[in-house]
Length: 384
Image (cartoon, rainbow, N blue to C red; front, side, top):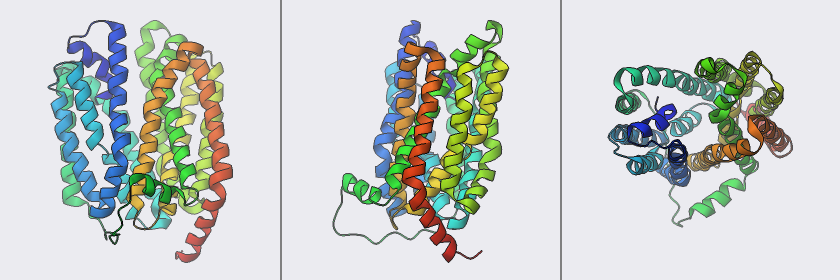
């Protein structure tokens, strides 16, 4: 509900220079991902000690307070501080991924994560719509208060209705550093390669999405830019929503590694023609097909993380995975904006498709073989 309106909120806080607003909006947008990237492994370690549900509640109640306080910001400095703080305590959805994956039988993990992804995408589609209507009726500050209230309701719902089957790992007397834990986790193939895949997925998605409106402006009449920009974003999200649960079930039957590689290939194939479109309807159709394939990416990658995580270190494994995701989300828009300034949006789409093809090769040669072996062993030991 709130992210599309940050630049407009800065105007309400008294900023007038468009260049200054753009600069601050970029800094404030990335600040949340920066602190989330830094703190995610720490929260993962606590989750392995105290449970994933506790981390969801910590994040839910914390974000409810911080986002509500954001509605009381007095200028860009206070807004930046609150976004940094939000990144420190955020992680509701990543913690939910950890809880769902570790409390679901491994042979059904893909389907469960696919359903969770559908809920996430549904919120991403509906949030800006509701936020847009509310901002017109009540102003931008009210959006932060309502968003905080929604997150509070979600946290209370988890507290009352979500049960977790959690047994803490046995305490090891020898204390280990975050770096040592990272080395231990990534020593298990193909975990490090999956982290790289997740980083590049987020880099490719977040590098393009915020800048698509510039491409829409190039392809459509000026009077309809806002409408068509909304359609391009919504059609991608809707297609993602349609396929997430189904591709999750496919992952359980055929292997998450197969779903990941073919979904990546599909996103790359449907991204390349976007470089050459001449009409807005062509872009809308291609973004729809991209969305169909996007539904299989992160659920499949998170299923693979679950399959290969060391016993007792599942949340820490997801913690580093979340850091890779946040890092990609942070640098994607920054480098995407730089590429657009040099080569335009068409150049960005071409570079993005090349990155996705490299990702396909990474999965094919670094992930497929160990993932296939683990998948076969799992199916041999699990009842049909």
